[in-house]
Length: 158
Image (cartoon, rainbow, N blue to C red; front, side):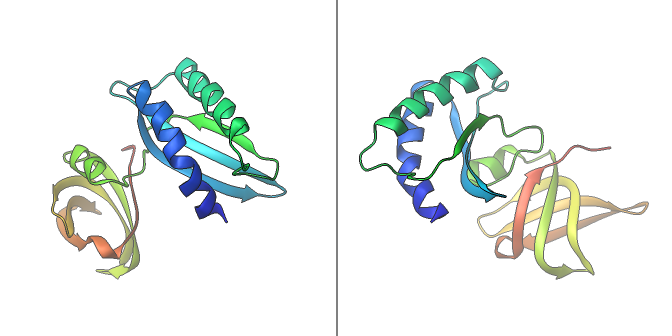
């Protein structure tokens, strides 16, 4: 159900977001407890601000309320926000823009005894990612197949 909602709403949201020259980073429709949430993550170079999120939220809410048939018949909360400092890497452009940045990569299966790697993304190909990371005090490099990646995002280095 949640995938159908996102597929139905995404073109509407994309048109509103693109009209403001913002980027649609991600969208999800999820149930948490008793409530449903439609979350829309937007960004632009230099970052998105709260007023811009509110503007997109108002416009999207108005469009969704006018759609027939109603794409979301149950009650839900609409949240429009920035993806934050730990922005997910979903599209090819996200990966390309992340080269040279500190990233978090979660894998489906262990590689070298680990399922999670954090380090500097040094190379991206259509099928692999290469990461320089610290293993205790040693610098190491790993290249992983994209199909092994469960999730990838920018990370904050501590």
